[in-house]
Every structure is written in structure tokens, then in C-alpha cells.
Amino acid sequence: MPAALSLATLAGPGPNPIDDLRQMLALHFMVNAFRAGTIVAVLAAVVGWTMVLRRQSFVGHTLAVVSFPGAAAAIWLGVSATAGYFAGSIAAALIIALVPRSPAGRPGSQESAVIGTVQAFALACGALFISLYGGFLDGITGLLFGSFLGVSDDQVVVLGVVALVVLAAMGALGRPLRFATVDGDVAAARGVPVRLLSVAFLVLLGCTAAEVSQITGALLVFALLVMPAAAAQQLTARPILGLGLAMGFGLFVVWAALSFAFYSPWPVGFFVTTFGFALYLGAAGFRWAAARWPRGIREADNRIRARSDELGAAVGA
Amino acid sequence: MTTGTFFVLAHPFLRSAFGVGTAVALAAGLIGSFIVLRGQVFAGDALSHVAFTGALAALAFGVDLRLGLYGGCIAFALLLAVLGGRSGADDTVIGSVFAWVLGLGALFLSVFTASSSGIGEAGGTAGVNVLFGSILGLSGSQAWGDVLVSLAVVVAVVAMARPLLFASLDPAVAASRGVPVRLLSLGFFVALGLTAGVATQAVGALLLLGLLAAPAGAAQRLTARPLRALWLSSAIAVGSMWAGLTLAYLFPVMPPSFGILGVATGTYLAAIAWTRSVRRHRQRTSHPMGIPVPVEMSRAH
Image 1 (cartoon, each protein chain N blue to C red):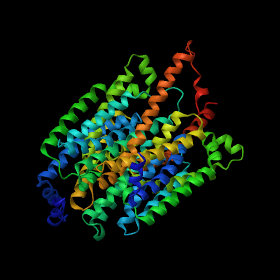
Image 2: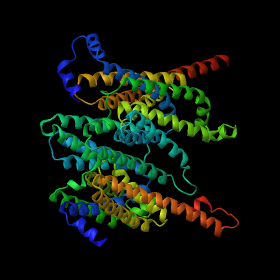
Image 3: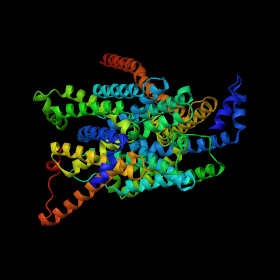
């Protein structure tokens, strides 16, 4: 925290944005924050896009929440917090994969009760680990709502390597996974291992949630994991274009949020969620307007065509 | 054991914690039952976010914390009631809105931490208290206020239990029989908002969902009868509260919220394991032919 205080006095946004950028990137920890943010934004866009398509955003949120006790336990045990984030999320992904889909004869509400309980219990475990560690009050808000001050070189390397592995796996699984998502029954009938794919995707999602948590905090993963992807899906249904858009949105959100957080006393989590949400609202608004706007033109077009058909018929007769 | 319990109650702060805890758990158990029954667990999740942001907004603007807490929860509960309360919207939209609300809460937390009243340790503690509860730190007058609110919720829910059950299980038939479904839903959501406000002070905004969902989920595992599940859920919640507080007293390093949630979660797990083994046993013994019961008939929905 003292770093942030001295920064506020040292650096203020000047009239020249290039100078501001240079000033910001002269600090090593900001360079690391941008590196980590970029890696995470790209990974989150790819995995998040598939996740939104599979309607698993609640699961993604749960996996991220569970990374909090993981990181807290790692800090308590004196291990690196990064390892804790991954351990928590991947363990939770495996547990969720093990739990069978709601057993026959039970309405789905039981399932949501289970997820809610798991989330609350995970957070309670985090509180326990923090208490065992003893006095870590600034850190707890960092873990929950994100912080970018302490990204180390090693952490950037780990984030990059894990992101590459996950992206490669997503590339390999992409097509069958999309088939299984769009029409599970048909895919299963064609011999696609639907259940195995969903387990694999959960593990990949766990890795991604752990990565995103390290930038946005465990509670605000929606900002990078869901909002850019959801905004992209508002605008296009095409996979390649959608993935590209989601990546662009994610990068914009991270870069803008880091820059604003650097020059203001407010937390990065606030900026990440606000920019992400604004993008999502903008995309939804654009889609709404686009659906409305050409309708008049299309109707006029149809009317003209009908009229010319009529005339043609009259001439023909 | 009796001397142990007596010893626990000898401390005034533990006495008020047990008093408030019991009342909150009663209310949360009842309300949670309806939430799970109506498939509205997401509403509890939503309220936990709003509770956090409301409380910290009040602190940031220098108002009493409870004003923001109750104000936010009740206003949001009314909004849910007006919108129908079913998770009709995509969970992507809902989740995005909540994430943004939490982001706002983080903003208020940092505004409060930077303000004169919240500088240093006080700011950090306030944030952590709202997130994870502070049942051992309630003052006497606060405790009485919380007990009264919780008991009012309990009385209101008990008074409307039967029609509310009817309206929750089959709203269309209930409406045709002249049950005021919309009014009941409104009352239910206001009670939910009040419970969220009280429970936030006891177990914290982040863990509120667990106190609502775990006892109710366990109760509905153990019995198919809705009314019995209602009481069982309350009993489990109160039992978790007592056991959790006692554990937190015996092991001071353990936050009380963890004790309470731990016991509630353990009960839920035990209920799942028990019903599963009973079902398996029953399948083996009473169905030698292995004739499956039609799904539609066994559903309580």
C-alpha cells in the first residue's frame, strides 16, 4: 500500500497521454501488471466465450470464489499465492465434475442450493485461513477485489505458461466441445465423449478462473471472464469473429482499468467491472438499436418489391 | 456438557451473540426453505452483493451502516418482487450486474478507508466485518434491534406459511383459488431483504447465502413434506448457529462465521449421504424387480 501512496504524489495524469504512458511503464511493477493483464484477458476471452455459450457462468464464478481460500491457505502455509489460486480452483473443478448431475426425480433447485452452500463454505474457509495467518486485513480486500501492485516476474511466467497450455487444449478440444455444447444428444450419439469433454472443460475453466482471480480478485472474475464474451455474443454469433471481439474487449477493459487505477486512488476491481459492464451494456444497446433500425428499411424494401411484383403481374396479364 | 454451556453463556458478548444468532438462524432457516423451494437461491446471492455495497456506501457517506444495509436490501428485494423474482433473465446478465455492484462496493470501501473516519485499521476492519460478519462484536442495543427484526420476520413468515407454500409450489392453481400470489410474493421478498440485512451482521454478506441455502437444502433432502421441511430447516440453522458459536469460543482462532457455516455445510453433506444410502438400501430391499418410480410422481415440484 505505501507504493500506492507515494505514486499518488509522484505521478498525476498530465496533458500528454504519451508521457503518462511512459511514466507508467517506467515502473517495473506496472509493466508486470500490464503483462499479466494482457495474458489473462486473452485467455479469459477464449475460455469465457465458450463458457457463456455453454451457459456455465455460475460455475465459473464458483471456481473463482474457491480460488480465494486456496490463495489464503497458501499465504498461511507460506507457499506462493499463485500456487494456491490454481490448487483451489482446479480442486473445485474436479469436485464439481465428480458430483453427478441432479439425480432423477429432483428439481434443479437442489443443485443451486448445493452451489450456494459450496460458495459460502469456500469463502468461510478463506476467512478461517486469514484468521489463522493472523492480521492480513489489507491483503484480504486485495484477494477479493483485485490488486495489481504485487505481480512478480515469476508470477507472469507462470500465468503465461498456464495460459499457453490452456489455449492449446482449447484449440484441440474446440470443435468437439462446440458440437457437444450446441447439441449434446446428437454429439453423444455420434460417439463424441460428451461427459469427458465437459470434465476437461471444467478443469480448463478452473485454470482460467484462477488466472483471472489474480487480476480482478476472486469476487469480480465476471468482469473479464464473462462480460467481454457476453458483449461479443451480443454482436455476432460467428465463432472466429466473436472470439476476436471478446479478446479485443478484454484487452481494452484490462488496459483501461490498469491505467485508471494507476492514476486514481480507487481500486482496480471497480474500474475493471465498470468498464466491462459499460461495454456489455453498449453491446446490448447496439444490438437493440440494430434490430430496430433496419426494420424500417427492410419493410420499405419489401413494400417496393411487392409493388413491383404487382406491377409485373399486371403487365404480364 | 452443561457446565460448558453455562460457561459460554457467562460472557455478556457471547450471550448477545447467542441471542441474536438464534433469532437470525430461525428467520434464515424459514426464509431459506422458501428460497430453495421456489428455486430462487440466486435471489439470496443477489442480496449478499447488495448488502455489502449498501453497508459500505453508508459508511463511505458517513451514515449509520445499518441504514445502508437495510435500505439497500429492502429496496433491492422490492425490485426483485416487481420483476417477478424468477431468474427469467440470463444468468450472464444477472452475474454481470452483481459483479458491477460488488465493484461499486469495493469503490465505497476504498473511499471509506481513505476518509478521516476510516483511516488505517478501522477501514480494513469495517470491510472485513461486512464481508465476514461480526456476531461477537454486537453492542447491546444493536443486538436487541437485530433480535426484534428477526422475530418480526419469523412471525410474518409463520403467519403466511400455508398460503405462501401453496403459491410457491403451484402459483397458477393458487391464483385461481383466490390466493393473493403477488401480495404474498411481495411480503416474502421484504422478509427476505430484512433477513439478509440481519444475517449480514451475524455471518457476513459473503456467507449469508450459505446460511440461507445449506439448512434448507439439508431439510428438503430429509423430508418431502414442505411444512415439516420448514421447521427442520429452522432447527438445523439454529443448531448450526449454536454449535458454530461454541466451536468459535472453544477455538478462538476460528472465526464464528466459519464455525456456523462449517456445521451447516457438514449437516447438508450428512443429509445427502444419508438419503443416498437410504435410497440405495430401499432399492435393494423393497424393489426386487427394480421397477422405477415415475419421475413425475416423485417430484415435489
